[in-house]
Image (cartoon, rainbow, N blue to C red):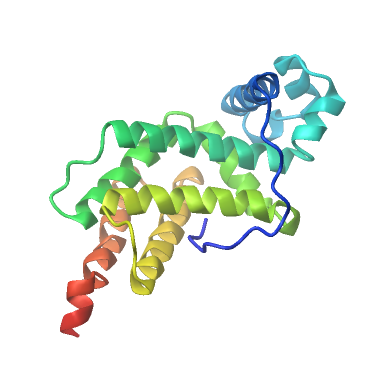
Amino acid sequence: MTADIRADHRPAAPPLTERQEARRRRILNASAQLAARGGFDAVQMREVAEAAGVALGTLYRYFPSKIHLLVATMQDQLQHMHTTLRKRPPAGADPAERVAETLMRAFRALQREPQLADAMVRALTFADRGVSPEVDTVSRLTTAIILDAMGTEHPTPEQLSAVRVIEHTWHSALITWLSGRASIAQVKIDIETVCRLIDLTAPEAAARR
């Protein structure tokens, strides 16, 4: 999940009607529930359609593949996290502390549903160019969450570079934890260490160099 902010040149899709949005919400909920119970392999399009109460063809009109669906599920989870974090912002004394706290809160939210987390991360890993716009949306959401925690509305190029490295580290830490190769304590140390880049790339620090 990189923080590269790219323009999406596809024509904008018309806004969903209230009924379509409700249908999309049922699909995403069904996807999350199946993934939480059985991981990536449990998310089968036919079973998602049945659980959501929609025709299989309708499901494919919303999400052309399982990867599209699970990446959209990740996007939905991040949007929920972002809303929660805005209601209860991190209390750290400086930007680096606040970002580390934010990412660990997001990590713990995923930790509560490890099979869902694994399914979403695998989908992001398997995503090809056909899913790039959806992956970019996940990236932009992750970037927005970090910038909100930093309290930065107009980041410099150096700060955006630091955010990208922080996102890479968070994603890698999630993968290593899901595979049993890292403890929560090690993840916390890695996140806190990489967040020090925020101090190094702050405008006042750059001015001193």
